[in-house]
Amino acid sequence: MTIQQVPSVWGASFTLPLDATVLKMDLGGMSVFYNLPGSLAHATPGKLQLIPFGKEFKLQLIASGNGMEIQMHPYGLHPCYYYQHQGRFAFASSIRKLLECFPGLQPRVNPDALIHLYCFGFEPAGQSLLEGIRKLEAGQRLHWNQDGSLSIQNGYNWPVGNTDSPRRWDETELALQIDETFARCLAELSLPQGAVGISLSGGVDSGYTCVHLKNSGAEIKAYTMLYGKQYSETSRIGLLEKELRLTVKRLELNENEVRSNFEAVNQCVSSPCGFNNATLNLLFREAGQEGVQQLFDGDGADRLFLGMNRYLQLQKVLRVFIACKRLGLLGFLLPVLQRGTSAQLRKTYTLFMNWNRGLPPYVERIYEALPYRDGFEDYLFNLAVARNWEYYLAQDPQSNWMDDPFRFISHFAVSKCPEMFFHHPAELQLIQNINATPAFWHPDMVRLAFEIPTSLKLRQRTTKYILRKAAATRLLPDYWQLPKIGLQSSFKFATSSSDGIRWLRQWETDMESTFWFRELEQKLGVRPDYSRLVSFHLWYISLPRS
Image 1: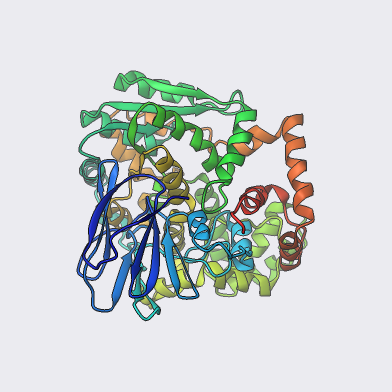
Image 2 (image 1 turned 90 degrees about the vertical axis):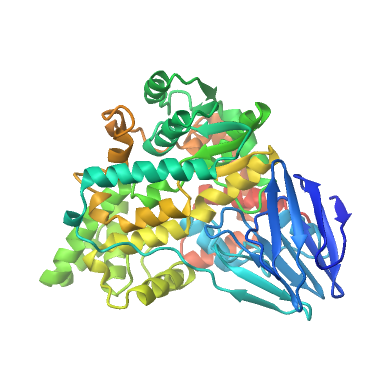
């Protein structure tokens, strides 16, 4: 680790190259470490600012009477971990660099965060998977006082959806408004110079982004990944390629490189990275080698505009529950579901029990493998959902979630996007000197998405209905209605062969003997699914230790 001493004076400013240098400043008798690159914004008196200048960052400490303040990006596009111990305070975009600043620190598993990881697939907001190390949430401000105390100002400001009737909206006008807003927002998110890349999945979100980037006159380097016979969107990509006169580089993957890349990624990131996100590193590496400085993707748009097919399935289940609830039929139906043996019936029973007990519907978690227990469901709700629900009710105290279930579902899903979609790409792309740019995450675009009622997002048995209409104003109206294969499963691709099965069993054997695995099994009440924990195991054993 390179530690570079910088001016230990309030108001000092300096410029450093974009790399993994750790800065050290001695302020008020305390050492402050910061790992570049990171994510800070908005300089005002008393705050620490990070200003991007091409491939460099300028870090400025502005005079303050009693300390300094760190402010996170409003949508938490980059992680920021922090830790205070024995008179030393450190914050970093990399949890590994943070550990290196405290050589005697032995990283211990945070059991609550591990349960969250197992049930949702990602690290919880505000926590890390290591005891004592915290993480700033989107929009939060942390104030470090010279006496060593910390205070956090809650910046939680995720939107709550609109309740307007769709009859108040003209679909054609709204589609044009979305299209105009998106074009303007993309222009504002784009760097003034440098090669621009786009990660194409074959779906609406990245395809629509690509159309606007091409129309802006940008020189685009486009990439897509092919998973052999298991998954290929070549035909869809080909249509877009032909219409836009674009050359898309197709990265043909093999299972060995997917597995080895998965191991390598989890040995460098700040939290366990699942197969799909980890595999994108192969695309990032290719883009970096070709000089791409900014890479756009469509991540998170499915949460803003309700684009997942499972939302349509959930909509049907919700309608059945609400009808049975209002007709007084749940007393008959719940015992029937409880006796069900299929995974889908067990999941439906858990959902109905939770909703009937007053818990609102939320998404992103697993259900099928976990038996229903009131105590565990309440624990998980308090761990992962309660804060969202309290905020939601504070914005609309008279709200009844059954009037429009997807208002809260959208609010909850969007608030989890930093951990699901932003942090890993940001870390991995910065290794390649690339600026990760989720295309839909401009404040005006997010605000507009939440003004649109659910009925214009899920309509005519179609997901993100109004976004498809907006894309159709630009190019090939029928293209945006084509069926998509669905999210590729790089895990299945990498572990279905005999070599893949052996590779997975090797890590399963390792996990069985660990203390954290046994503790997790006790908390869950069932034997954990090993496949959901491989990334955590690889990540945890690779952490720096004294």
